[in-house]
Amino acid sequence: MAYMKKNICWMILLFLASSCQNELYKNPLDEFQSEQGVYIATKGILQSFVEEDKDTKIDGLQVALAVQDTREVNVTLEAGSEEQLKAYNAKNGTNYIVLPKEMYEISQSVTFMPRYAMVDVPITLKNVKFSMEGNYALPVRITGGDVNVIKGQEETLLVLEQRVNTKALRISTDGRGSGSEDNTMFPSDFKVDQWTMEVMVNRSSYRSNNRSICGTKLVANASTLDEIYVRFGDVTINPNQLQIKTGSSQIDIPADKFSAQPDTWYMLAFVYDGQKNSVYVNGALVAEREIRTGPYGLIGFWIGGSNELIREVRFWKTARTPQEIASNVWKMVNPDDENLLLYYPLNGKKRDRETGEVVEDDTKLWDWSKSGKDLPKHSTYTFDDNGGNGFIFPPQE
Figure 1 (cartoon, helix red, strand yellow):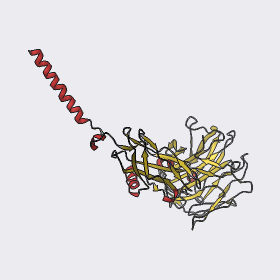
Figure 2 (tube, rainbow, N blue to C red):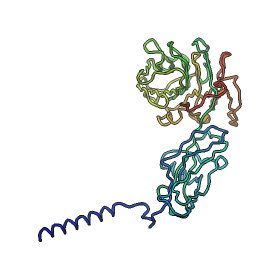
Figure 3 (tube, helix red, strand yellow):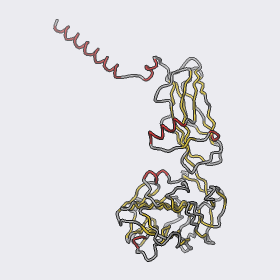
Figure 4 (cartoon, rainbow, N blue to C red):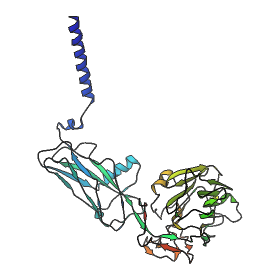
């Protein structure tokens, strides 16, 4: 008798435990009192690199049913919702811009044939023109149809990144070529509390020391505390090691952190936040150190004659954040940014600072920033188009 009572007690406990588990577990489809539902199967956001002025087909957007259906199922889609993108930006701390309607085509309806549970939804981009104000994004969501929409899985986002096809400035390969500089860009008392200098380079070899890249000219009668001088190689480091001289000292990037390889593009960034200097390669931090404090003085800027291929030279009067550095590695930036003191795309093009119009013009090293501090172009300089193919960024594998 006692044995039977014990078994009954165990059965009651198992029943109660099972009931509790069923209460805790809720299938999202139960909310609709149905075993069927539709959702966007694409995981995370879609990202695509696109060249301007080209029609491109984007694959990867998939809409799915929870289970196969024996009937035809129709579902409606909406693309380009300002409200959806605004909510996404607020939640994720982004500032994407809605892709203009004339730049894309996407079906507003999806049909599942009987026994089909997954449908690909192609997106066609048409003659995309990128904005200097930020990256485009296309929000997409399911709005209704013959079956219920599964909440929390009805939206996705296509983020467009610009694939840049460009010329680059080619300078002497022997290290004896003349540099380009201007000693009187700014007033003699001009100072910045913080700064960021970025430059993209590509060399065919790293066999010689002291291959200067770019830097600033000192304030008249100033000490070397204000010097900003970056180069590959020195007597104490290998020719393919990076160095920044500043504040009467220097930072040598350890070889195990970065050793440049021939025929490879690198985006280098040097940041001073008012207390410490940081160095980034392709968006990754490779060195940081406190050297000096206080504002830097400068009156001019130079680009070294020992560069081979060089582009996207930028000087900011602020300390760019790690996120800003990483997110703009291979991109062009907004020339009208108030914090951008100098901007040399070095693509053989001139930009009208009033209208924004860009035209082919290889007579100078044009500054696209509001400062308008164009640099002279040496007679030996050329704008290389990579054999007619252009240089592609992000670099192709």
